[in-house]
Image 1 (cartoon, rainbow, N blue to C red):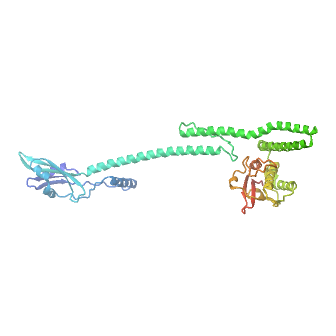
Image 2: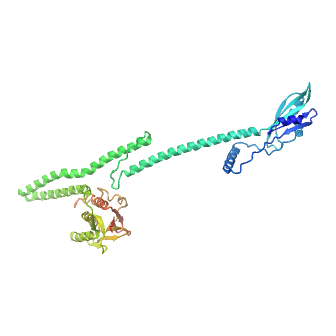
Image 3: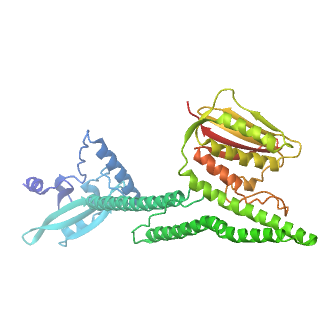
Length: 440
């Protein structure tokens, strides 16, 4: 009858046994070990995730194990203070370790009364593994929620950082694209409507570039304005000097008149060259493009240089067949004039100026080489800018405003070519080369 009662009371995670007054076990039911759930064979991803979480939880807290020694009731009776107290009529509980110390068992003993006498005691035992498992499951849920929160926060932060980085790169690209190869502000940065710091920076860039564009336009127009405004007083001074010469001036006064005319001529040359670049840029928009033989134009220019500079030898080398390009032959002749004059001025005395036209893959290269001092490394990138010159100021001779190579670059860009300057490999001179696309 007692065995039947215990079988009705037993649980899968507990052990119940009854002892009489002689400390003899008369009934036993249940087991302290919990049955292990079978793993699903197909859900390998779930098993992998479970192992990973179990490994993480094992590092944070001890994991319960069902591989332990339960011990026999007789071993418990040998040192069971709760059983002795229950047989004396006082319910008692205690916790102890298993014999192999791999689990903790909580046991409770309660007396069994038969009338006014104690007939025995009922002992119920259970391990703390269920509590530890519940704790570990709570830690798993907490860890999973924490990882999910980290993933969501990381995704949000990554998206925010990506957007900020994209906006900064876009602002950088707009700022770099606002200035063309000539240093002109061709396209203003559109200020952002955003109310954050990047939006403020974008609007500041836009305002700064707008003011720089206005100032750059003023500086570009200043040369032509000065040239236009000064021509009238120069004409007045010239006419006054001519009238003084016609009036019959003394010999010593005539010397001063001649010096004044030389200075006036120099001033007129400066004014002409100041407006040369601006007039050229304005005329390029209306210049018609045509097909012409670059070799024929260059050979004709070289023949003219031999007459204009008899003290300098000009060597010409070009292909025997026509080299057809698209552009303006007059502008190309003006381009070659600038380079030939530059080579003549900087070339060492007694050395030739070499002008060569060579053909490449889909392009032609027109080069002008002179022997003399090499270019300073610091000036190679700025050589084709406006008002930049490496000439030494001798205090006399023709005025040089640093516009010749700038005009040459403008003409090269009109022909869709690229102009570069480089020192010769042996350091004995300088070579200017223009690469332009050819026509079939």
